[in-house]
Length: 216
Image: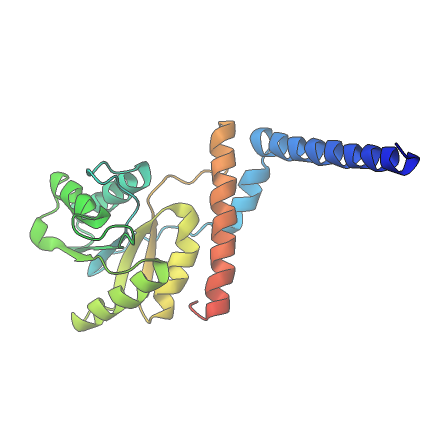
């Protein structure tokens, strides 16, 4: 074998070790430092718990047999608290599942859970045709205009609120943001820090995409 071959093998080995070491260092920083907290902090939007004619709840995933994911449960719980505190008489659940070709969809399961938490079914409206946050903003804004509603309490996960609020305001609605999960600058477990970093990375990409599309 030629000297050039051995040199190339050694170079590839050095680059591979450097990449692995860098990857390990990034993971250590994400797991055991405040890096993820600092990364997600610019996405924070303070809650605005004022009365409004409607509460808008953005859907999260549910299994086909109706088991709600943790984000979906949190969002419905947050809406139920607002409803029972008398901050709004109406709840709009918005979001569709592109993989679902027929009912029930996650919005149906979230509405059922809302009823179990004491929200009157007559107070619940659903928009199941929107496949993303922008579509929800467009369709909910049209629904609100038809009912003379100008301001809403918007419920979604804390890390998602900045993009969601911007999308709804771009459609002419006044928005009071309500994070469905407790916000903390420090989340204790390494896996939670990693999840928070991944969610924030997704949201920064979403903000850039929405800005590029002219949706915010």
